[in-house]
Structure formats: C-alpha cells, structure tokens
Image 1 (cartoon, one colour):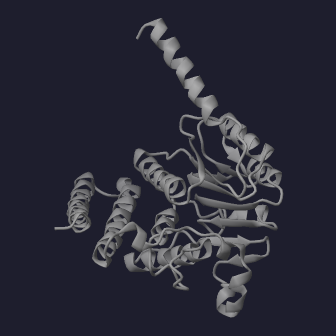
Image 2: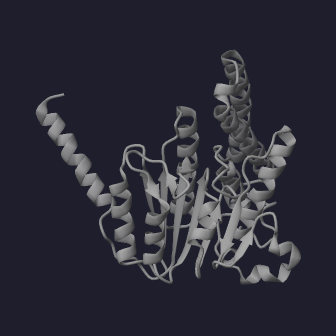
Image 3: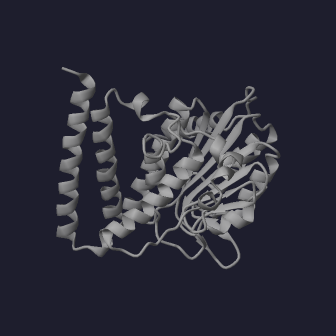
Length: 325
C-alpha cells in the first residue's frame, strides 16, 4: 500500500473513532448500552466472547431501541474506554445505563482487572464511571471470570451488579452469558408469564441453568453467578426470593426488562421450540471450544463436525417453518 493509502486509512480510522465516541445529548428516558469485549487468550474463547457481544448489541439496538456503543478491546485501548465513559457520564441519560463486560478477567489480590489490549481496565476505573452517573439507574453485567468480587465493591442505590462468578477465585471462562442471552427468548424464564423477561428473571434462569448444565455433564461447577440489587440484596446460594417471595417487587432488577418475547421472535411455537434446541447446540459448541486443548485433536474436530451438522439441520428446519409452505 502506498504512503497516500496508509494516510487515507489512518485518517478514516481516526474519523470513525471520533464519530463513534462523539458527545451527544440523550433524549428523555433514553437507554444507553455499552458492550466491551476483552482478550480471549485463545481464538476459540474470543470467538465466543464476540458472538455474545454481537447478540447483546443486536438485542439492545434492534429490540430495545437503545443507543449502543460496542468496544472490541482486543484492538482498542483503555484510553478509548475511558474516553467513552467520560462522554457518557458527562451528560448521563435520564433513562438507564447498561454496561456489559464480556471476556477474561483476573484478580491480583488487590484489584479486579478486565483483560484488554495494553493496560487492563480495573475495578477502580469501573467504579469511577458508575459513580459519575449519579442517580441514573445502572446495570452492570460482568460476564467474566473472577467477577464476583465486584458485587461487594460496586453495589449501591439505583444499581444492579450481576456477576458470572461468586468471587475472584472462580477463574474458568464462564458460560453464564450464553444462558443469559437464552433467557431473553425463553418462555421458561418468564416466570410471572407477563410476556416479558426482566433482568431478575434472566439472572434466575441463568443461575439455575448453569448449575443444571454442570450437573448434567457430571462436572464440578466452576461458576456461580451473583446479583446485588440496590447495594443490599445478594442472590446466590442464599436466594432471598425463596425465603421472602414478596421482596421481588422491590428489586430494581425486577423492573428492568430484556424483551422481546419468544412470540415476537418466531412465528410459531414449533419454530420457537426448535430455536431452543438450536441454543443448546450452540452452547455445546461454545463449551467444546473452551475445552479444545483438553481433547485429542481428532476427537475435537469430530465432535465439532457432529455439532455443526446438527446446527445446520436445525437452522434449515427453522427457516422452512418461518418461510411457510
């Protein structure tokens, strides 16, 4: 490429970067969603993280009509993230702010660190951003390893903290986000049958499904999700809703919704049922990729091929049902 070509693409990339994070005045009741994916360590991990981020982006942009910012922190640096934090918090929306962290994280006995290109994003920097939002209703979904420590560090009034793990010692790549996204279109997740899935319902669905998944596989459960609401209520092993069901209505997480319902996504109950099977196969593929280095290469690719064939058949069946005769 010529020097002129390099200069053109460099200028274009700068223009896109500034336009992406340019300050804007949010409309009354606007919902803002920030999605950050970090380093995967392995290509298989990164593929899963990016897939979950794309699904989350589509949900909030297309279905929930939110303003969405997505940062791929494999290339973008902490300075880009902090710039976006500053611009959102300098004139916060009157509606809601959602922050998703999807990827690997660690804890060095002092700080939670979300692994990105260059210096990691720390718990202190996340706290600074959340605190700057003031009384805005804020929802942090930390779908990372070692994220449980954030529940006690960041919880406060008008804030919900959801973590994929119960503490900083659970360091395996969590599958929590896969079940969380499944909850959005699951009739089972809609516990009160109001054709909407709240954040609380999505959490409880994911919490339950993760435990059942590990039990079904005969494997030790390496992730235990948690939810902190208003800085006071923590849902993990000691589920307050089982002891006091009436407390559900007081939770901020019960008033934040992750629609659409299954009926909006698919034209028939049969297609919705096949879609649920499709999600199960996709999760099997996600888990298989996480375990690639633990399996003989031939076994890995044989199992992957079998799952991909099943997925292709399901996709074709769903398309036929949706297209009609």
